[in-house]
Image (tube, rainbow, N blue to C red):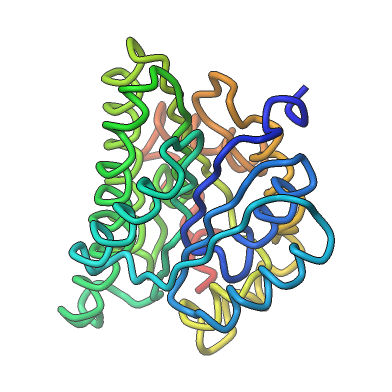
Length: 265
């Protein structure tokens, strides 16, 4: 059982101050894992730590970290590895999006999304890989998106970052297999979190797809249930992932017939 697998394990979660990151932390704590929680918002991390300290007898460490700053990533992860000595699971959850048409996106927004969603994810992974290789075990879980499989209007930059995450994850999975390291991509559809406070400032997208939005607790549970198992991908919801399969087989037809459905932003 996953609960038995996580007891006493060391789990690092980036973007842990809210949304599915915080929910993953709560579930891992329930199952007896020790936590390293990272995010830009130290206040929210402290509040989460206080909550979990009051409920569970586990070790919890918090670190303020902006994953887009690779020098900070190196410094923080060196401290963590020095403290723990062992890293069992890394959940690369930090990320953000801005929904604009390609010609409207600023260079700063483009760089910002790639620096957090792609470069930051790679930087965090590169810090734990040597440890996991040395211990011949570990699990890297990268939170990607269905947007990495099906691009839609006004998400060109965000989709590009998630395509990059999937490409990196797929290659890494093969590289790490001989070291007994599992690598999983999580591809959710829209989740009811504060992600859309930035991505969808006008509220148009959330209004149009509210009935399809995923519960962050449900997403977190599916992720935690697969920890330390050789799971290639977690795709949510299933019907949306079925669409990505059809898209891969018949892209022109899919784009033509689905044009109106895609344009919800």
